[in-house]
Length: 452
Image 1 (cartoon, helix red, strand yellow):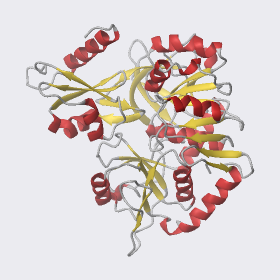
Image 2: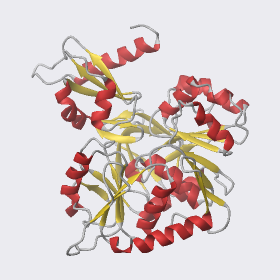
Image 3: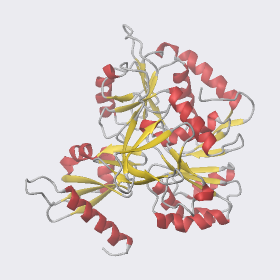
Image 4: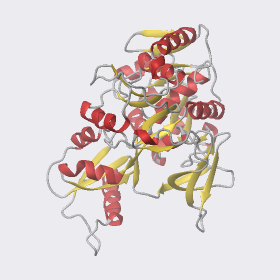
């Protein structure tokens, strides 16, 4: 169960709808919606979700009736939905801006074990999902509650997408703790963002590394935010210089900064660095969550190797077709994260980079080969993971980063474009990704130094 209370304390505040639900009202709404959706037990449901009370109620109700739920962006284009529908044959589409709610009738399919499906590649169009369970999500949420010392009086701003594992874990951990959340679709760049934090007495502000950069640019932490007690980040490496700048400001205002590391394949979050250790361990992503084991496989002489995770929140596996959904309902005993890192003498995890052709976009693992394939028509010849997401390389043309992001279904500022005279290649004619990584790194250094 992801919802632990049924009293008159506030559970959800939906800013856009000006709607507040207590835990008792949330429980009643979920029960009523579950009655309506009971026919989807053991069936596949595509659910469009946004930070809104209706999405939360639908999600909890579908889990209650043990439907297999694929969480997707409410703005998913109808063409992409059609592609995924052909692969997974869902019995229902609910909550999308691009499609009316639809429930198919006919001969019932063989009932499937309940699971939660989250896209692996930031909605690139690939039909590949991570298969998670409600039990695994609840276990990970409980680990987060313990590790971050969460209490019933805490209140988080849920402004991250609910079809990304980090946004979902912020919601589930607070509901499991009996705390509350403010649901908002307002961008962190807007003045209303800070106003909502103050008006609704938000105590916890989550974000990804780029969110911290926005908070810095908008001078968010110089505003009057008397209730704010913690800032959390996950989904990628936070530049040490940004932490060095924001850390003292947050400490001065009594706001704790929690550095975290997580992956969708592990139900959201894997490790946490508590605020009191930030200054002594800047760059570390902290200690494994309680009940979760992190191991380093095949370490080199410096102790750096493949980061593996064992815990109850591990995925069942990947799915690319409906036939994959019933293969197993047991989580992987050992999860290879694809990251390289080491554990220090105190047990803290330090990441050194990716081991494979993967990048992270707002916490979602993205296959760079998929990006190249999807964007080839725009003149993109290669894609490289950078500190903030992805850099794509072109030789000619004027590809717009925003157009590329829209084509991939990525959030703004996820993709950067590097125009080169000629893409470097190896003797065999293959793209020289090592050299491209150097070029991208040099471009980032020049930008950071204010040159062009």
